[in-house]
Each structure stands twice: as structure tokens, then as C-alpha cells.
Image (cartoon, rainbow, N blue to C red; front, side, top):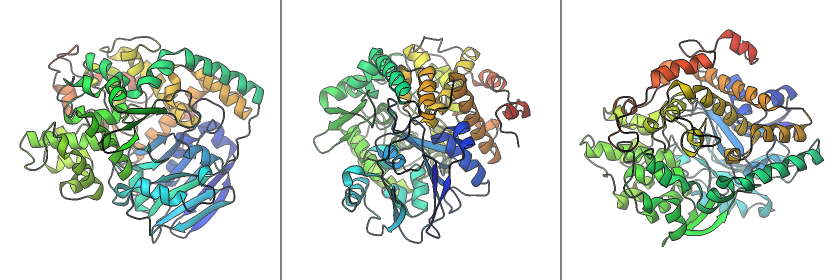
Length: 590
């Protein structure tokens, strides 16, 4: 679209600048724009919850086009949970409505003197009073704002709930009622700026250089999506929770705060059970032919999800198997604006501390009846919830038991047991935003056999494959398309769609080069913030305590040789610092 909007909430000033062509070519958009702006504008002296931190919303070059799943956007900032660079990615409609206003990125700085919300349309950006919205949950905020705009059907709301207002360190931004910009506490940064919501209402279509060429490659892409059993059958029918059984059978399904690797009640929390008991209908984000989202209903409530990660975090991670309670906990996290993974894993940490007698108050594993009240306490920072709102690492350290926090760099781990998935453990350890499965997920090759099955207990053998996936994941996030399309679409599909849209010829290797550039700049940001190779590690439990059962019985993560090989593959030195030669190759030399 060619424009960047900047809003200084401290002064109320709105400025617009042209998008540099070099920036677009080298970083594409989304996550790429986010890390470039953050590195250039947010120095090491800036605290995450201070007015000096930037909050960067950015779409990608395929957002809003006919590219399948091309409806995504990213939010980047310095994380209040980890202190690292963080971007979080979401679907729904907001990214398309934002791009339709004519902007590629929105950079927010400063802090408003009172609560405000932003309205963005093709005429520009306005700052509005949000005092009456402060304290409302996500659904009430969304309803109120859509009632105030002239064309609610053309508008999309991204907002925070009470968790963001109270600066819970893992607060989310929620768009379109239940799509979460979840990881790393981006909602807390939004709350620290007294920014309650951003309403985007644009209908401009992105220009396409080669419309006929785009139509053809989109046809090819759609055909591949319809031929893949994962994107044509598995995800549409059972959603992301469809992998519960296979993860459990492989002994890779963390249970009770990673003290077990299988869950005895897996049948009761599977995608099949969800479809049978709670399913209402299938739905999808903008421009998505897959439709992995479930609309579900319990006796007391209704909403979207839970997705696999949320179902696990609020269920088996806490030893809970009541599917209705898990679903209602998921709905509640969305209303309050909480990241479900960090919420569940922090509660799991509490439960272990209680079981070990370290914390004298709280809940035990399996206590479904206490789950919803505990989530409320975290969002409102009440009682024990105030300490838990700091995240599992700070919470466990407070009680002298850091080994009970299942996190990397402060970010709570998702639903994959690294002792049963070696390269996935390396992925968690090296992820620039902390423990994360979306920075190069090894689920496909290690468990699902996509495109082929590899030895999941191999050590150095899979390092190069992980790096390939890390670069490709960065490209997906920069382009504005969903990683689920990658089950069927190759990097060649993406490069050809990008070429047709922009009129610039991109090959698949160009996408990997851009992904590598993004990855290395994120690494440079973290190094500047004081992170070192010592932070590329895993919880002690995963390195020292062998699994007691299942196909991976007796195994730990043999991280050290994998990490050394990883640094070598990346042309980093033994301390994990990119070499001058590598930086020059990527155009990142000082």
C-alpha cells in the first residue's frame, strides 16, 4: 500500500510516511517490518512497559490478496514477559481491514494521559476517548465500538481486556472477538500505553501487478490444499485438536507440568471428543479455504475453540479432563485477554508447587472446579493471581523453585514434549521470542511425516532441517499468510504468488534468505539486550530427568551437541554470535 502511520499517544500527533522500497524488498512486511523498526527505534535502555517502547502492527504483501489464508498480520514489540524481541501473529479480519485503509504498518509510541482508542480508515487515524471502555472485557468492548462506527459491517476491532489493562505480562490483544495476538505480552504493552482498542475500517484492495499470473498460482495452491489429507480432511473436520491422539500415542503429550508425557484421559479431550460433544459449526479466518476453527457450545457459554494448544494448556497440562470446563476456560481467557498457553502453564506451575508443598495455598492437579476463578484472579491481579500474572518464571523464582517453570527465556512452552522430539527441543531453546512451536515447528517431520518422517530421537542429524523451517516460518509471518497452508503449499507457491502481486521476481531461495535475515536481526536485538548463548537452553527437567514411560522412555534432550551444530550451521561463533561474514551476506553489517 506504500504508507506507514505513526501515532505518538503522548502528544496525540499522527504522521504518515512513505514505505521505503528497500524495506519492503528486504523484509516483506509483518514480522520483518516489526523487527526492523524495533531494532532501529527501541534501544536497550527502553523498558517494555515504558512509554519509549514501540508497538508495531504490520500486514504482509499477501495480506488481503487472493492468496489462500492471506489474512494475517503481526504485532511486534519488546516483550514484558521475556525482555526479548517478540512478534505475535493473528488471523481473523483485522489485518485485511487495516491494510484496506491504505497503510502497511502502524507504529505506536508514547503513553496517553487517559484511556484512548484509535479509529483508522482511508481518511486517516483519529484518537478517541476510551474512559467508558476501560474495565470492559473484549466482547463488551467490541460491541460498544462497533455500535459507534458508521459502517460496523466494514470494521474490525482489536482490543485488550482487563488483563492488558492490568499489565499481566502475558496479556493478549484480541481481534474479531476471539482471534488472539497471544504470545509474549503484547496486550500488556498496549495497556501500558492506555490504549484500549484499534478499530480498522478499510476496503481498499491491494494492487496486483500480474492478476492473471496470480489467478493461476492461486488455482494451483488451492488444488494442493484440496489434495492434502491434513488441510482437506484433518483440520476442517477436527481442527487443531485432531492431533491429541497421535501426540499421546507417541509419548509427546506433556501432562501435569511436563512431569508425564501421556495423559490417561486423552480420549476425553481429543478433537474427536470436541466435535462429538461441543461442536456447533466450522468457521475460518478471512481468505482461508481450510477452516480449522471450531465454534463450540457448553451448557453455560459459547465461543470459538479451544485450539490444540489452548485445550492442552488449560486441560492435560493442569491434569484436567473436563472438556466443558476447558472450553469455558478458553472462552474466559479470550474475554479477559489472556494468552491461553502462558495462562495454563503458569497454573500448571502453581499446581506442582502446591503438590510439592512449596506453596501452601492454591489448587492441585486435576482441580477443574477452581480453574475459572483462578483465571479471573490472574487477569485482575487478585490474591495469588497477582504473582502469577508475572509469568511462570518469575512466579517459580519467587518460591525458590525455578525448575518448576516450564519456559525458555521466560516464554511458557507449548504442547510438545522435547524428550520425545529432539529437534523440537532445539527449536524451543533457540527461538528468538522464547519457547515457541511457531518459530520452526518440527511436528511435521518428527511426528506427522510431512513431507517425510525423520528420526525424532536423532541429535545433530535434524539441525539443518530445523533451520530450514525457522527461515520458512519467518517468511510466512512476513508475507501475511497462515503456516497451516504450508502443509500443502511449498515455498515455490509462496514465491510465485509474491512475484505476481508485487511485480518483482522472487524465487523460493529469496524467501529463505529474507527469513534468515529476519532471524539474524532478531538475534542481534536479543544480544544487544544482554541475552547470551546461556539463554539457549531448556528447563532442567527436560535435560536431566528421563521420561518414565512411553516410546521415549529413558530419554532426555541431548541439547549441547545439537546447539553446537546449530551455531555452526548458522555461521555463528561458539557463543552464538553471528559472524561478520554472515552479517555482510545478509546486509546486516553495522
